[in-house]
Image (cartoon, rainbow, N blue to C red; front, side, top):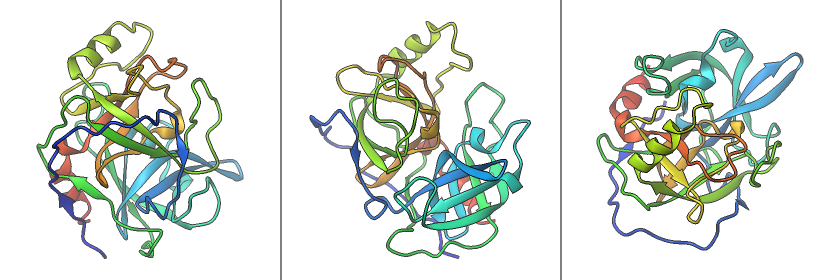
Amino acid sequence: MALLCWTVVLLAGVACSSAELGSQTSVEKYPSLAQVENRAGELWLQHCVASVLTSYHVLSTAQCFSGVNYSDRNSRIRAGTSYRGTEGIVREVYRVYIHPDFGQLENDGDIAVVRLQVALTLGDTVKQALILGQGIYLPTGLALTLVSWGTTTEGGSTGNENLYELNLYTIDDEDCLVTYLELNDVPNNTVTENMFCAGLRDSQGRDLDSSDVGAPLFYSGVTMGIISFGVSDGEDSVPVVSTAIASYSNWIVEMARY
C-alpha cells in the first residue's frame, strides 16, 4: 500500500485568469480524481467526487457516505477515467471513516476517508493526491481550480459526461458567512473556521451542482479543499463552501493508515 503524503505550499501571489467558464480536461491531468457511485436499482450513478489518497483509500465528504439510506454495499469508487460512469477502475467500499465532529454543528467536519475492498492500481491515470498541511489557511482572492463532472452552466440540471475544470477564487470568510446567514430558506448554512468559500471572480458566487460535492479545489496541484455545500440555482451569486483540508490533514493521514 502506497503511503499518503501531505505537503506544505507557499501561498504567495494571487494569480488571475480570464477564464470564468469551465473547460474540458482529462484524468491524465488530474489523476487523483475519482467518482463516487451509488446503486439505484440495477444502475450505478455518479453521486459525488473523491480523491485518491493511497491505493486503498479515497477522500470525500462525510455527507456522501452517510444518511439513513446509506449502505457500503450500495456505494463504490470509479477511478482512472475522464468519463462519467464508464471505463477506469471500479472498487467496492470496505469501510468508511467519518470525522467525529460531523453532525455536531451542521456541515462542520464534513470529511470522510474511505477504505476500499481491493487496492487501486496506481499509474498514469490513478495517482495519489497531495493534500495541504495542517493549519495552513488560505488568503482571500486566491485562484483555485475546481475539477469535477458537475454542470458548467448556471442553473444547469445535468452534469457533464466529461471531466471539467473551472477557475474559482477564495472569498472573504466573513462576507461569505453574512451571505449564508441571510439565506433563511437554506438549511445547514453555518460557515465555520474549518471551511472556506469560493466563487467566480466577477460574481463572487458559484451555482452548486450536487454532483460536485466532494470535488477537490487545487492550488499548484495541491488539494486545498473539497466541495461541501452551496445553493442550487443560486444564479452564481452565492459562494460554494468547501471543507478546508488544513483543518483535518493530520486526521486524514491517520485514517489512511487503516
